[in-house]
Image (cartoon, rainbow, N blue to C red; front, side, top):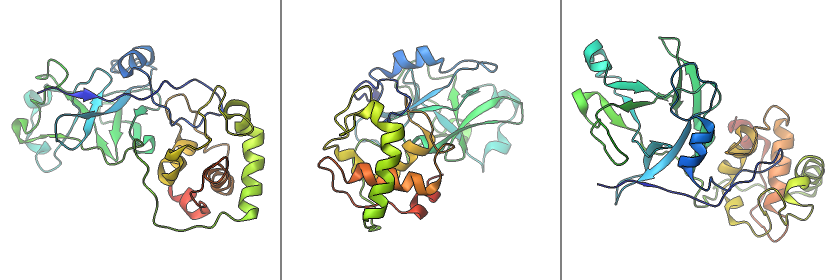
Length: 260
């Protein structure tokens, strides 16, 4: 069974870039970022979306190796000999996401003091019985290994059901934030420069992905959640979703707050 690690266009590093453009080559990027390093590394692990045939997309590392979590119901039955088969995915800095929503990724100290990556609260592991990309031998191993399904994707627009008006006040506030922070990379008219071209960009229809990217960062995009408050996040998201040929409606402060 072959696994496919999906790719999108290369992202260019830029301090204000909305990081919707993916990494040109996840394996190369992870090598430069140090994905899969042992505990003590200061590099960021890269977690990506893998596909295989008609299977639901699942998580893989930068080398295409399947990632797992351990069943809470069965983990107590996994003794020391069993646990030797499971290598925690570690990352001393915030993990990077490739074609998955980055806000679901975290790195926290586990009970061994290792900074382990989790996805939607699920600690991630590699299985030592998987020798190459596409192997899924850990699924069901000792009734404890469970492959992790991708819960969200930035590949296709997902239009939120909540209707928010792009009011003149929101647009004006967003234009101010964009001009001061984002225009240097995306161009004053969204035409793109170092950053992604936002003019006529259909992925802006996906409000949750846009908010997650602004707040938490993605690939070359730094996290701006500490710099922007919820009102500024909602305003700039509304502005880019309704400028330069885009018409996707507004984003509320409540939506911005929920994305943190």
